[in-house]
Each structure stands twice: as structure tokens, then as C-alpha cells.
Amino acid sequence: MIVIIGSGAGGGILAYELSKSGIPVTVIDKGPYIETKEGIQHYDKYNDSLDLLTTTCVGGSTIVSMANMVRALDKELNPYGIDLTEEYDYVERLIDVHELDDSHIGKGSKLFLDSAKELGLNVSKMPKAVYEEKCVQCGLCALGCPVDAKWTSKLFIDKTIENGAELIDNAEDIEILTENNHVIGVRLVKDGEELTLKSDKVVLAAGAVNSPLYLRKLGIENAGRRLFFDPFITMGGVLKGIGFNSEVQMSGLVVGDNFVLSPHFSSFIKDKLNDNTLNNEDILSIMVKTPDEGKGYITDDGDVIKENTITDARYLAEGCAVAGMILEKSGVDVNTIKSTVYRGAHPGGSAAIGEIVDSNLETDIEGLFVADASVLPVSPGKPPILTILALSKRLADYLKNRN
Ligand SMILES: Cc1cc2nc3c(=O)[nH]c(=O)nc-3n(C[C@H](O)[C@H](O)[C@H](O)COP(=O)(O)OP(=O)(O)OC[C@H]3O[C@@H](n4cnc5c(N)ncnc54)[C@H](O)[C@@H]3O)c2cc1C
Image 1 (cartoon, protein in one colour):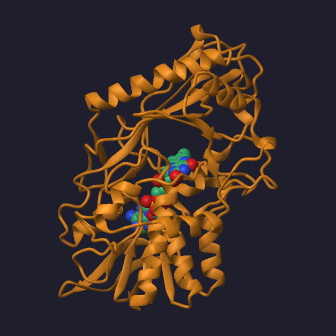
Image 2 (cartoon, rainbow, N blue to C red; image 1 turned 45 degrees about the vertical axis):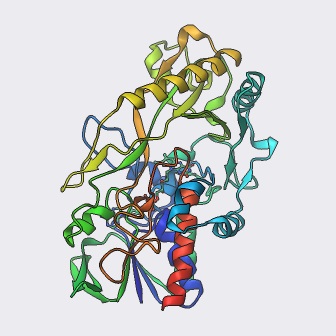
Image 3 (cartoon, protein in one colour; image 1 turned 90 degrees about the vertical axis):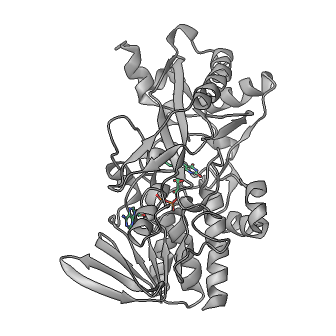
């Protein structure tokens, strides 16, 4: 049996692929099994100076993701002998990655695409795993889709259970057991009862903030001493009656040298304008996201500390300047432009390939693997789910052959 700890982007596909091949799997998650629309209630809280977005629940952060699916890190994974071309092809087919049909590109998103094109920017529609036939265009993707119209890892977990595997959610006091530097199982508490699962293969997929803490407890001291996440802000202003708040979010993408831009609604923009004649329908806004240098780290009690470097500020300034031009060209009143606070998404790199795990994602402890954003060697500066899925699919194939 293979035990997988965590059921988000990394854990879900691994469980699905292994169970589909008849390999016994148990998935353990600290979070509860929820309906996707309840995602908003499961965001994690870090310290007061950090607004880092992650969730703890079955499906992990994919529950609240925008289902943007972009290939990344081809060159960066090459030195480790990793070529994900076949895995990308497979995963894109499996979850049906495609550009949204024009019927699902709203007025505000179209203004973003058209204005960016007129400005000569490198703009395209965002590849997504959003399913038009179900999508009601409510704009609530990041709260948890109310009609399950996007791919989430929970879909893989549901299929894994259909394939006969066990899911233990709401697990407490999870501990990986080792003997003579080999994995021998996992101990946990479920509903007040202690359970011990025997296994010579355990895969950690508890996300980039949590997986390193398990590794440190096992003596892999360097885990989590480095962490990146992608800094972002959302900036926007008033464009009366645009109705952008109820469009499919992030359906366009501008790729700059040091930033990406995407149309993204934030209610904080309206709140900052202090004008009670305004509604959410009157705001057009853009997310500015930059790649990170990996100057963060995780404390022993699981908090995240992140230095903002002078380069972070430079990249954000470059992105904001271009976003401002798109907003102006789209007809936004420039006197109303406001920004959210600095936030973070996509934590990764805390158990990187070449540092903590090898090219097969195995640690120095035999039989202990990591399959989540922790293993990414550098920040993709782009949505990372597709890369995590492809790496986990590759690990599934490796484990099938090693079993
Ligand atoms: C609002 C939002 C929108 C996003 N949109 C996109 C997007 O459109 N495209 C994209 O590519 N990326 C997006 N991301 C980022 C993406 O969701 C994450 O990068 C990705 O899910 C990380 O995968 P993971 O497997 O490392 O972690 P997760 O998917 O977060 O999974 C971690 C799992 O571990 C569980 N867990 C947590 N703590 C423990 C513990 N101590 N023990 C056991 N289990 C534990 C969690 O419950 C969860 O099941 C978004 C993120 C957010 C927050």
C-alpha cells in the first residue's frame, strides 16, 4: 500500500493514477471533505503581516483556484533529467485544458484582451480547466465554485475512492514512521482513535508550507529553510456598470519580462474608494503577479516569514505601470485607481528537486517521497498547478514500475 498525505494538486492525481492501476492507496488529509462551494471557509491564517492564500481541505488550494493551467519550468527542470512534455500532454487531455469559448469571455475581460492587444502587449486567452456547459459565470471561482464547473483535485479523490481506495480526512497528529532510514508507515488519530498504517512508501503532498515540517521532524533539517511564493496585488478603478465581478475570472493573460497580468476582480478596490454610490459591478481590475526570489522560510511552528526584496518592488512597479495603461485604455477613470495590499499565492520550493528530493522526488529516507509545490526548484512566476500535476503523474508512473 502507498500512503499519500495531502489531497491537493500533488496528492490527488497521484492517488487517482495509482488506484486506477490497481495499487492500494490510502489518502490522509488534515482538512475535511467539503463541497467545493464551501472553499471560502477553509482559507488558512498566517501572521498579521502576511496575506498568503492557501486552504486546508480535501482538494487543497485547487478548491479555490481559478483553474488556470499553464506549462512552465521546462528549462529549469532539464538539468535534473526531467522532461514533462508527455505528462503535460496527458494531463491537459485528462482535465480538458482549453481556452474559454467566447460565450464565457465577459465584457470586462474582453476589454482587457482588446486593450492589451492595441498596446502591443504579449496577450492571449488563459488556458483553463473550466467547463462552459456547467459554468454560470458568477465570478465566484476563488470562493469555491458553486456549481462545480471547474477542475479541482477533489474530482480525482472522488474517482480514487470509486477505485476502492480509502480517504481519511480530518486526520490529527499525523506522524511518519521510519526505521533505519526506511519508511515503515504512518500513525495518526482519527475521531479520537489512534491508527497505524503499515507502508514502505509514503508520499508527502501536504503543500509547500506543511510538507517541510514533516521532513524536519524526521531530521531533514534543511526543508523549508527556503520558500518562494508569487507576490501579487490587484489594482483597478471605476468603469460604471461593467459587471466584471460576475465574469469568469482571469480569462486573459499578459506575459511581461518580469510579471504577468490577468483580469481579476477584487471587492477591496470598491471598499478603498469610500463611495457608497458604487457597486461591485462598477469595478474593473487587474492582477499583477511577479516571480519570487525564494527569500521566505518556514518557522518550526509552521508560520511563514517572507522578506520583500528590492527586486520584488521593481517587478511589481513594472507590472503596475503596464496594468495602469490597460485600465486607462479600457475606459477606467484613472483618478479612481486603487490597489489591494501586497498578497501572496503559490508557495513552493521548500523541498526542492536537487536539494531535498532527487529527480524521482525521493528524499534521503528510502520510500519517502514529496509530490507537491515544495519540489519546484524555482518559482514559475505563472500558475503552477499544471506543472505539479505533471510531476505527480511522472511520479505515479515511477512508483507503478517500482512496486
Ligand atoms: C485563490 C487561489 C487561486 C489559485 N488559482 C490558481 C490557478 O488558477 N492556477 C494555478 O496553477 N494555481 C492556482 N493557485 C495555486 C494552486 O492552487 C497551488 O499552487 C496548488 O494547489 C499547490 O498544490 P499542492 O499540492 O502543493 O498544495 P495544495 O493543493 O494546497 O494541497 C495541500 C493538501 O495538504 C493538506 N494539508 C495541509 N496541511 C496538512 C497537514 N499538516 N497534514 C496533512 N495534510 C495537510 C491540505 O488540506 C491539502 O489537501 C491558486 C491558489 C489560490 C489560493
